[in-house]
Structures are given as C-alpha cells and as structure tokens.
Image (cartoon, rainbow, N blue to C red; front, side, top):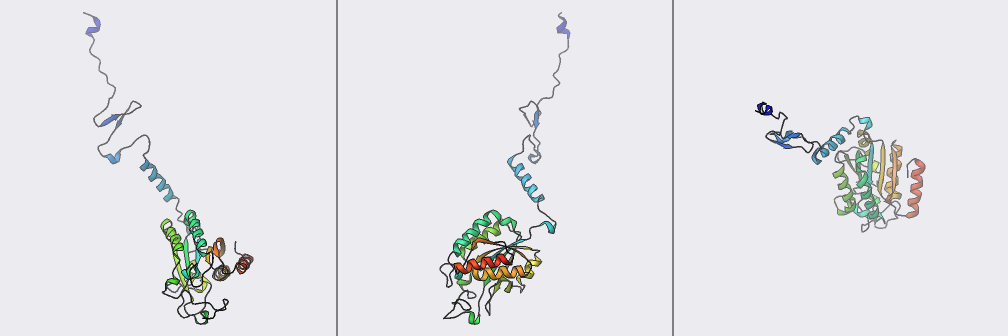
Length: 262
C-alpha cells in the first residue's frame, strides 16, 4: 500500500466565513452583527462623517462668556415710510437693505445680538407738520400701527435669514418717538421698557455694527449715542442711505471723528 494512502486526511483549520458574514476584499471575513446598529466598516459612511463634523462643531461652541461673540448687528429704522414709495422716502434705502441681506448671508453667525430700532409715532407733537421744514419738522410718517411703520419687506427678508441661520442670537427691538421727536435708537425702549443701552449691556455686547436709514439723521444719532455710551461702533457704508448726499457725507465724517469705524 502506498505510504501516502496510510496518512490521515488533513483538515484545513483556517477560519472561513461564518454564517452572517460576507467576504472582505482583503481576505478576512467581515462580520455582520445581528443588530445593524452595531455594524462597522473600514471606511466611514457619509452619515458617520456628517455626525462627526456636527459633533466637532458642537465642541467648538465656546461656553466661556468672555470668549463668546460680543457684537450686535443694529438695523436702524428700516421702515416702509423711510423707503422708496414711503411718505418720507430715502433714495437708496432698498438697495441698502439688499446689501444687508448679502452681508448677512455670509456673516450672520458672528453676531450675538440682533437689534432693530423703529419710529413708532403716536402723537409726536411738532415733529409732524403739514408744512415741514425738513429740519425739525417732517411730513406724517411711521404712525404706530400703520403699514408705514413696519419694517420694509426687503429688510424683513434679511432679518428672517439672520434668524434662520443664527437662532441663538438675542433679539432686541426698540421703538421710539411715541410722543416726541426721537432720532437715536438709544432714545427708544423695548416692549418691557428697557433702554437699548441697558439691553445691550445685559447681553454683554461691546461692539455694534450699524446699518439702516437715514445716514444724516437716525443712523448718525444712534452711532454718536453708542459711542457716548462706551460701545465700539462700525458703520457699514454700503448698507446705509442719506436723505441728503452732502449731509450724509458730513455725518460720516462726524461719526468717524467721534471714533466710529466708517
């Protein structure tokens, strides 16, 4: 008898695929657990990558208040009556609102606070006049509860985008001029009766970025009061519009001389 025929049959003891596994291209079986949530693979799926990025972003959120953004974006009087077609229209207002929308499209997340100021006249006395001098008296405008006092739709679009992309930001809305002339947003109060300066300090704001209308009136007054209150101020000149071009240019020089970045 051939000697090889007397040898016992050798068994291949190399581990092979087990039930519930599929061959791995590299040669080793890849186990598929009964629970799909426990599955792993050599390369992360898109969902795994997305979750890891989201987790990293959450870890980047700064919990130390001293390191959080301390800048407020301030929209001054972007109302229908101050826009083209309104009772006291400012040429270039709508273009300024659209520029704000474009600005916020890439930067909304840098702001910790969003501020809007609005004229809200009920009986402002001699501030309204049938024969205005356009210095101390003006045509009827921004009457409380009327469409002219509402934020212009182009700016509403920008504000809605801000709220969508930066929902954590504090929102401060102040109204002014109910019973007298008021130009500066710092003359206004929130619905709860809090002044703008106090509301900003409560939100730990140190820096304001200001846009809106009109450069030579309410923007000017708001910026100068902000500087007096100790805030740093930046004015975005492509997002403002003036009643009068020459007075608008003079107002910008005045704001810059007072310490604003223009």
